[in-house]
Image 1 (tube, rainbow, N blue to C red):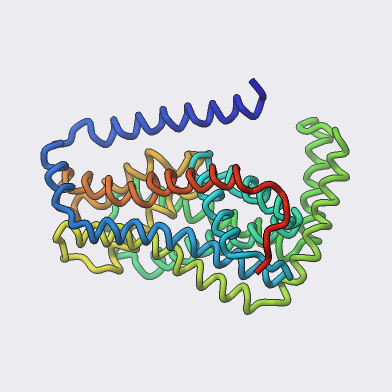
Image 2 (image 1 turned 60 degrees about the vertical axis):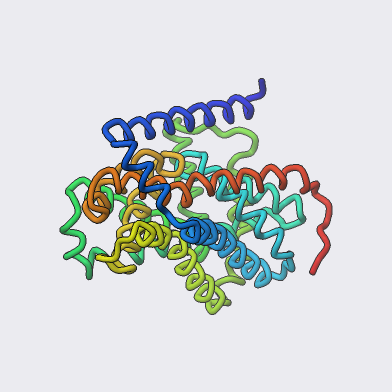
Length: 346
């Protein structure tokens, strides 16, 4: 078995084990009768709405990728960008800290004649905007929504603040790479030299030279993007909308249960707090911790543990598990159909 195959197998086994542990933790003290009765009472229109919101969520990223590629003179069919988005979400969902998404997107973009430096800078900008939305929402909640924050348990507040801090660091570092590539090159090469002096990293396969070449490759694309600030503004707005498409699934579930005491804004912000808290944690899709935080936050809102667990099955089912299944299918089809030949241009 190859090294890559063993790694994929270990990732799959870890995912299955984590899923089994999550299912056990969620359902070990629940009343299955109440949960089943609640689920069977959901009108199909709400399930259809939830599914459509997930699809729109993924396709919103496709629009961003196409827009950014067009900005750097790559005319790419939207269907290809949709493929890249589903591939990215699939591998992000099944790998710790979502580390597998971008490499696979770059792999398929390269097969369709988008050079690696351009693909990298585009996807990095998408990630920066994606995480910037979380940072913006998180800071806004902390600064202006302390009344809501104080209703959360100490554990939830801890993960919220941790998530904000980790995302601020991540956005700052990637922004440095994109918008100040010269400074980034200096810091990274000096850091690499220090690691070598401390014997924490060895020089092999011309690693230093390849690192410097990669940093140089960022400069052209990043310069172009810095000169197109309107493009960045527009795609950031789309990223906000994209995030709220996903967060609003929980409100759809809330309404489907016949509840109306809380507003759309409150439910959506509470769901965003979960995403902020788990986004940078080294777990595939934040599995386990996402479900735990959801139950802690939404049990009083849904009127009890059984109702909250039922809502978790639907909300998390659409926002993660169905997303994994659909994106996995699209990724498989992409693997079979993308051969590296030029696709027909629009």
